Image (cartoon, rainbow, N blue to C red; front, side, top):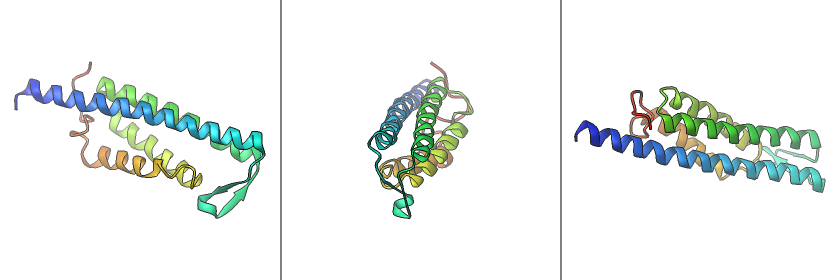
Length: 140
């Protein structure tokens, strides 16, 4: 394959990944609304898959802030991926690991994000070039 075709394919894959990360960031704001809704409704929520149950507004507030920061983090990583920034892979791993931790804390509400975050981590660590995360990717 020619260099031009390879760079185009890599930039296309990186662009698709960037769009996916923006959507994943939006999904994190669903977590924010869920935690804020729990505060408003004075709900009891299971944490760590039911190991703990709480109705503490401070816990809900901290989780809401964490979901929001991670949502923003995925948007920042999307921009890094889009631009072909060499540190995009490391940033993706960092944000995905943090998201995985918050998702585990907020089980079962955050269960959908667990395999997504695990896949993002695996992709960034095991196949960064195929994911458009390799250094030297052409920027847009």
